[in-house]
Length: 342
Image (cartoon, rainbow, N blue to C red; front, side):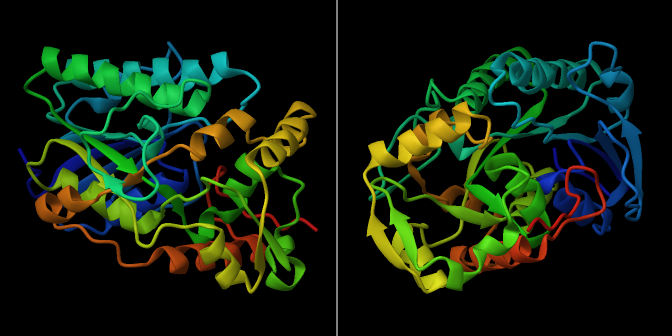
């Protein structure tokens, strides 16, 4: 059932890119009575109607049932992207931690569970047309991120069978960006020493055009609005979330005033693999392989059943994010702290 006035919502991973947007929207929602934000490190940020708890979902000592008691919904966003060189560690946080969240929500009698899945859960698919939520979710097995997201899809299949009274919603967003996430995402994917000012167009006269590198993007606030609408409705199941148009080298080159130059996949992958092997680049070549194979997503179900539409186009999202990179933008939480390098 949908939430009623005065409802209590618990958000895991509440201080990250998606969490900060979700918490802000919920704290401004008149139907929401209170928001409980769970994060490993408590923030200085104090939005209305929100209280915080220092909780690591990966820890066996964390009493998640206690945190969830009395909640009308749990929105599970907690996720660790790093270290990519230690997949057993991310598995403990992302998979085992998520399973603890699911089990605790059921034990606490929480009626609604909204889980942050991803386009990364999808099996390889087409780049010339979009697929709906029925596309297989077996991920790309060589990439830890995709493997973990896909495993949790199977976990939720079993969870829904065993707990039919819990309304489960799975959000499958495209790549999420906002100005305030620029510093965090630079650290996660490009490394903390990459100068943000390198995103200036005049420094990028050429842009690599890699076959298969065609993906979708979405503003984090637009994704957060879908989470908010899902909590406030009776919907179940999976929802694709993305903005138009798809992002490729031609679109990026137009935004940056650069010229796309064809670069073979093997050359690009070899460079990424070498940098990752030397611990100069956090993003792994396995994730690069996955990105080249991700399908484009059809978001019709989100529009028709949630009444959701993105408010920003993909070029607007990328442009805002690039400005954030140049400025070292961030927010008042530890994962989102701003930092300008170079």
